[in-house]
Length: 500
Ligand SMILES: *[C@@H]1O[C@H](CO)[C@@H](O)[C@H](O)[C@H]1NC(C)=O
Ligand SMILES: *[C@@H]1O[C@H](CO)[C@@H](O)[C@H](O)[C@H]1NC(C)=O
Ligand SMILES: *[C@@H]1O[C@H](CO)[C@@H](O)[C@H](O)[C@H]1NC(C)=O
Ligand SMILES: *[C@@H]1O[C@H](CO)[C@@H](O)[C@H](O)[C@H]1NC(C)=O
Ligand SMILES: *[C@@H]1O[C@H](CO)[C@@H](O)[C@H](O)[C@H]1NC(C)=O
Ligand SMILES: *[C@@H]1O[C@H](CO)[C@@H](O)[C@H](O)[C@H]1NC(C)=O
Ligand SMILES: *[C@@H]1O[C@H](CO)[C@@H](O)[C@H](O)[C@H]1NC(C)=O
Ligand SMILES: *[C@@H]1O[C@H](CO)[C@@H](O)[C@H](O)[C@H]1NC(C)=O
Ligand SMILES: *[C@@H]1O[C@H](CO)[C@@H](O)[C@H](O)[C@H]1NC(C)=O
Image 1 (cartoon, rainbow, N blue to C red):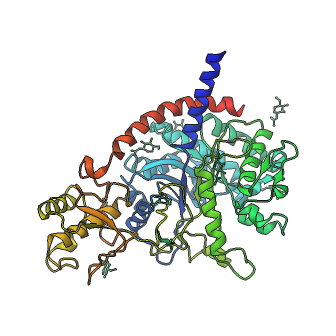
Image 2 (cartoon, rainbow, N blue to C red):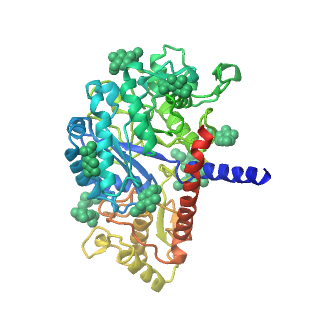
């Protein structure tokens, strides 16, 4: 008995570790309706600089998938709704889609997820009958390529298909959709995939006509007497996001599905809106997204499933000025097209994501008085094995002057540091480099501080100079992965126990 309890406890820790650490993430959606959409290499430079390690594309754009190759960034690709009918009506078309958009890029591009359609049941109800075939055909093509264990298949759904979502314990799926949802949930269960849900407390708040307090939508602390309590379960809800995710768990329970984890494929808040959208403000967008990130990464889980965090893709990376409709539609982004942040997220204590110092720019420069031979060696390394594009240092190019080793080394060190997303240990170069807030730009040689400069980024992950420059992170990373695999296996075993 004691042993069993100890084992259970260990398993519980294992589950928490799996769902909380390696497997729980914040990702970002990348919409492309911009009049000046950055080039894929610039997009990937931004992702790296901001330490964003998970992205979702609304299609399977070849240029983006090539740029994401060997970036360490995990990618969810999508079958756009326009292609859904073809894919859902023909196994061969589905197999071609997977061959062209997934197999040909994998594993260089780490595609982990295929989203089949987007909000199909609400946006394109006519396609509902073929949605399950599309899921199955895409999955069998992955099986045929032996990629079904690495790549999950699901379909992001709008939360509007969940009715009576408060209290969450009363929630159920729109009955009309039951004939589609039951086989879909069976598919997700049998393939170990996720229930993908788009969660927009902004719209819930807007449509509630004042019933939902703004603070409740923004994850702001509520007075205890204002907290929402589910009278059936006595669970306390402190924010709309958790209530929506639990509503999805209860709606699945209503159809007798208990062990399909929820993944939030879209959530966010617009930073600007029309005059009839007074709560689309910079401050509310910052508050929502900052709190959402902290909430997800804090491993809090939801009241129904505490400790089982819900990986979430923020909507979205860029403001999309070409989006039609309300002004808010164009303003869900964290960044402008040129890579400057729309607002600085408030992420104290939540790690290094979104390089929370985007306004306080940092640079990597040669140390004053450093030995010139050591500087030269480090410069040679950076421009060689370090894969920095040093063409700007050639005679006549924009960073040639002043032609001395310290200035050239500063250029190369800073380029490397930004290319590596300003990761700890990437501005050392055997002790001859230092991080500084002083902008080393001079004349035509411009240092941007937050993002990589144009032409600085090269394909592929640059290697570390040696053990002293790279810190211990690569080996720590490997250890973590092995550990995580074991934990994942344990976690899968226990997942069903906990949810049952
Ligand atoms: C891709 O991501 C998965 C999931 O995190 C990871 O286990 C795997 O090692 C990655 N593959 C590559 C080639 O980086
Ligand atoms: C669809 O094609 C895959 C190969 O891509 C095959 O394994 C599977 O049996 C086919 N399924 C159906 C329903 O035809
Ligand atoms: C349920 O779904 C059907 C089919 O999409 C739709 O016509 C109906 O309006 C939905 N009901 C509610 C209450 O949303
Ligand atoms: C769920 O299971 C219960 C008990 O086994 C059964 O009575 C009920 O009909 C099932 N509901 C659905 C939607 O299958
Ligand atoms: C993080 O989790 C701890 C305990 O699980 C909780 O006390 C704390 O309020 C949470 N913080 C946030 C920002 O959610
Ligand atoms: C973000 O802020 C936290 C707390 O201030 C800090 O520990 C962390 O290093 C910062 N991350 C970056 C990339 O600056
Ligand atoms: C920049 O950093 C300083 C000191 O670390 C801090 O007081 C200031 O608020 C930061 N500025 C911004 C815009 O984050
Ligand atoms: C790179 O950026 C600098 C300064 O922003 C600009 O003057 C230069 O023309 C750009 N070079 C290219 C190749 O785009
Ligand atoms: C990156 O790789 C692509 C395809 O291999 C190539 O066309 C492109 O020029 C490369 N970009 C850089 C900056 O090396």
